[in-house]
Amino acid sequence: MTRGGRTKDRETPERRCIVTGETQPKAGLIRFVAGPDAIVVPDLAEKLPGRGFWVIADKNALDKAAAKGMFSRGAKAQVSAPPELLEMIETGLAKRVTDTLSLARKAGLAVAGFEKVKDWLAGGRAKVLLQASDGSDRGKGKLWTPPGGRWFGCLTASELGLSFGRDHVIHSALAPGRLTDMLIRDASRLTGLRGHDGGVSAGKE
Image (tube, rainbow, N blue to C red; front, side):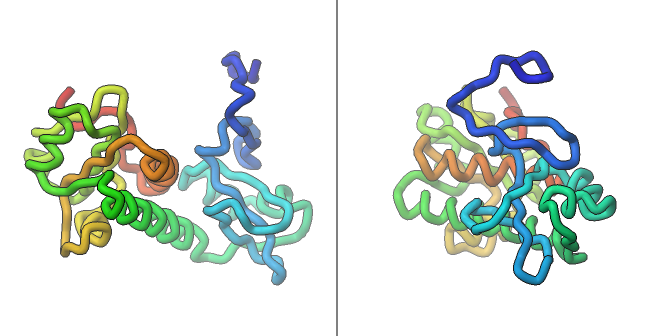
């Protein structure tokens, strides 16, 4: 059992946040390492060598880690966070989401456009609905979250458009698969930084 009283799932890797002190599935945290110049480096792919320390994907938590010197505590060495750290993380996560969405499109696992997305939702083919944060609320409200799936509004129309070779995209849907699972993880983290609702509710149920 964890401190929160929930049963611990041994199949899900967990890490401890150096800010909150809570242990939770690492999918909701961001890994950092100390670079050779004692500068904190975000390891979004979780592949960099060295001692890793973790912070929950939340803007306030990351600000606190930098302001209170908590990165040094996690690294067990004196390190400093660059002033553009949050921007680096946000930009990196947005690129990971758009790159994964592009791969899903090429694999036939993602579509864009209101009618195509609506068809996928109606046919039960979609696991994730992605809608642009700067799109019309009225238009977005005409679509719905896939049953048992996810909705994200953490990307702009131009960012979504990058994945489909267009200037902008408002609506996109993804079918179940490994790439979609990867996207859910990074989109959830990006949502924590940008503050958009990344829960399970879109316009209508």
